Amino acid sequence: MKDKGFSLMELVIVLTILVLSVSLVASSLSNLSRTIELKAAAKKVSGILRYYRSEAVNKGSVYQVLFDSESREVKVQSVLLTASADEKAEDEKRAGEGFKTLYGLPEGVRMKEIDFPSPQYPCDLPAIEFYPNGGSNGGSVLFDSQQRKGYRIKIHFLTGEVKIEQSL
Image (cartoon, rainbow, N blue to C red; front, side, top):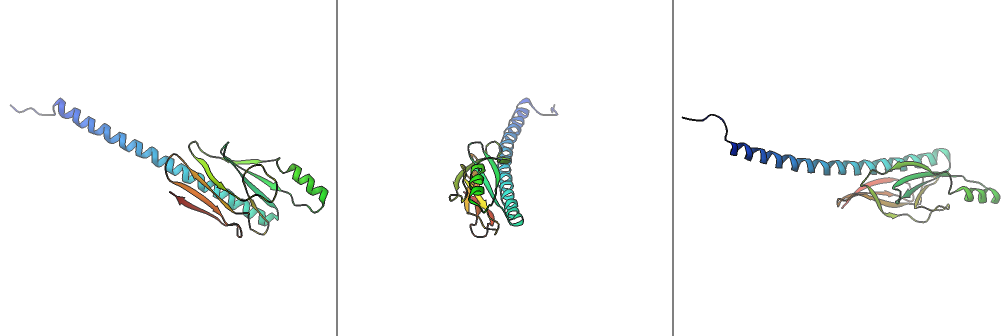
């Protein structure tokens, strides 16, 4: 007499294969979501940089985009341009006040290799400055996670152009 159906051993083997397959796919999806989150963070920060470059040109003022690696935030402040020595001293006194936090990095994304020259206007954090002529002080910053790959944002000092490059 022939039995119809599957034996218990066959069912256990099939279920084991299914569980292994699902676990591999799940870990792969979590890595993919971290990669997407990292790329989105780099694009968001580059968008902020591009926006404040155009604001500096349109409004004829200087903007500092500050990178706080400890709190993992990107902040912005406007620098007032004044002619008299008294007003300039007052501006320098206020330069550290009035930060506007624009973006907090997602968990697991960090800023590394922040390479900016000293800003022209006083500031306690590493900063990119955008000037009314469209230029900047230039530099680069690397965004990465626990994975090996990251994204480097480069800002050209003469043109203020912002580029994102994948880094290994």
